[in-house]
Length: 267
Image: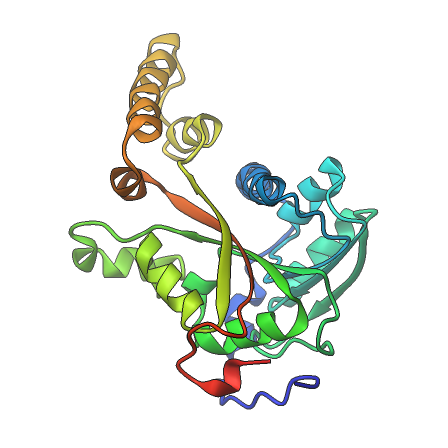
């Protein structure tokens, strides 16, 4: 394939839906970005994969890029973001390894085939109306991909649709569902990493977002509860651990011989 010829009908206001999302760095996004970056590096390390030229698609305000730069991961980072406010926020960070930041329409990646060693697609697919269109573009511009999605599916989720949609999650996944989506679009899963929300993030949720009083007893109770969850998570069989995980991180490659619902997804 050559540079994208993808045609898709988009609502004219789609970028505007996101434009006010970022007013600069936020403590919450920087905190969660730290652990997303750690997951990303961990899954790559497990495969011995060390990409040099990397594109993040849906880079938000650049929190993951900032942490990757601090960790020395990659030599040259590039970013695409649908929100103009996000593009401004990334540029204002002045991240040394970030070489280019562009706004895009959410689907078409303005690069030729194989422009990068790897594409990062973290916590994007759950927001996207046409997931497969994005995945075909990601697959086109790089041979390797690091993808993470939250595992939002749980019993009773159909009663909380309004809550999920309120923060833009219009697609929900289990490990099985995201594997099916990727494999059916010609992706080969090289490595996987299941993860739970980190204790530091839970502390922020409890004592900052939910404004619970931070007393020694409250902190100790939280850590005891989380330690019990972590013990169950790390000692359970894979099938049970998948039910307890909050996110799955995957390192993928193109699989020219694999499944594809549409042959146009091949390259």
